Image (cartoon, rainbow, N blue to C red; front, side, top):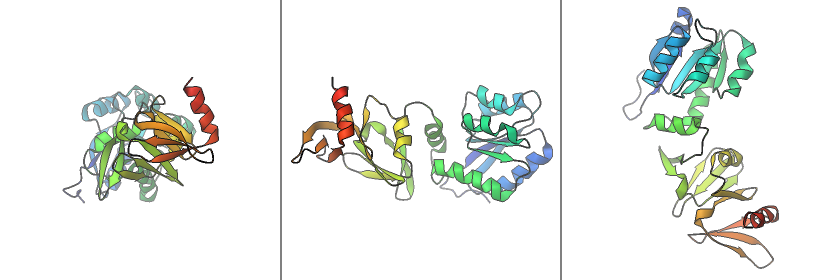
Length: 251
């Protein structure tokens, strides 16, 4: 089944030295409407060359291949796709996840197990639509986040992190506020905090982080409650614990 016209397919490369394994995975992926297999490699060097040339969104990477262990191949890649390791040897699982692999498929695996790996990819992508490569780069990057991809109606759009005034946690969700809008994302607040510039984004409460560039004042309310007031007038509560940290920051 081909992808709908308004969807940019997620591209994938299969790297495995076993023809039967490549054929089986290719056949299963052919049933995934939003994914397109763009290449196959049977060795470590061929996998590296193909990934750098085709720059796929996803790489299904066998660990035991001629002329290059899959884990070493992953370490050497300049282009960083989502990686799903495939192998018959479970002892490599820890190394795979330490490298940041999306999943680890133990051979032989079927369509149901593959689907769970694809679900993990989709959770990072949102529903695959336009600018898939940009979203993948943002999700996989280990550096400071510059954009946050959020849902707006039926679309996924990038919001400049600089435009975010504050972030508020509600259970497993975070609301990202800008001066005029707010967006809900399904991610833990501490995971976002890890990717934000710590000189600009400061936690002031276990459930709130503010962008200091948008804070106009820290005010004390009646009863001693401290709040951070952002540019649009919204007041975000500061807990006593984080108030002490803020005072230290200002010294």
